[in-house]
Amino acid sequence: MVSENTLHLLGHKKAEAILAHAIASNKIFPTWIFTGAFGVGKSTMAHKFAKCLLSETVPTNDSLDIDEKNQVHKLVNSHTHPDFFVLEHKQDSASIDEVRDLLNKIRMTPTLSKWRVAILEDADTFNKNIYNSLLKFLEEPPANTVIILICNHTGAIPKTLLSRASKLHFGALDESDVKHFLQQQHIEHAEKLAHISGGSIGYALYLNEHNGLAIYERLLRGFTSETESKATLKYIIENNLKDEFRIIVNSITRILKIYVDMINGISSNKDTDEIEILHNLRADNADEETQKTIDIISMLNKCESQMLDKNAVIVYAYEKFFS
Image (cartoon, rainbow, N blue to C red; front, side, top):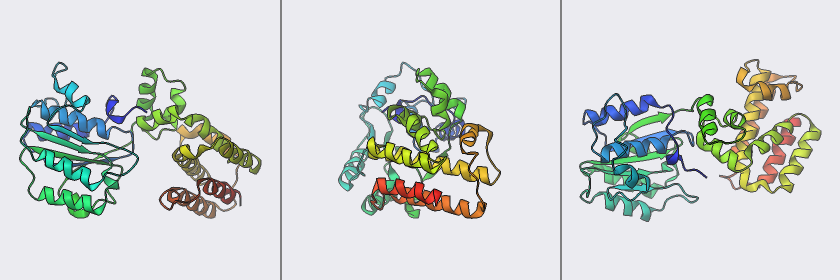
């Protein structure tokens, strides 16, 4: 999968201007928290911010761009800059030893730059010991050191840590921006992938690499009748889609939200294709139907955290919908 920091940065000009102004005015917080959905550009912006700091470039025109010939580009992209550290996204959450090792490194005197920058991804998955280590470090942060915590949301991060950081939220990208990027990469079905991406280039690429469009369209047909529901469940089981469970959850959630909007008369024109497929469904009581779909979505999103049987949860979703 293409990592987020290899993507061209689209949108988020306001966030970039805030970071550029911080550098230009020499009022740089030692800790930043970048929040927002997966794949919308948080890591990309963090790397761009790091490049500007490490190259000691004074931003102009609210931009973090640096000279293309500057060696910092290559060193940061390859994670070989001696003053740049990244705790990357991986399957398991970071360990306390990994974080302590990183914090010890950034306490050292910078080598090539007057700054040291550390990016910690998936900060909303850290355990209590890691948060305590970060808080202790931030009581007296070394001069000219910047830590960037990247997360999808801040709910799990202690308020004491949040209060010590400057926060930037990264919203979803325009569907047209996602489509344009995919077309530039010569990716087939760019428009359809962009449509179901939720404004995330990273997720659109993930869908493309994991047959996500076909899965979405099959799941959508499964909500048109009980017969199609059974066919969809058979498709999921026969194709062993447990590894694509996140795609299944996101897809069903999206479909159900479109359905709820439709029965409540607040449909969006951009979801015309889904509405055309779902339009034969009728709800006798919109309030009851809305609550039912909320219950289904809640169960889907609890599945992994509560280690429930994935296939059983998908069966539950369809049976609950048509009950």
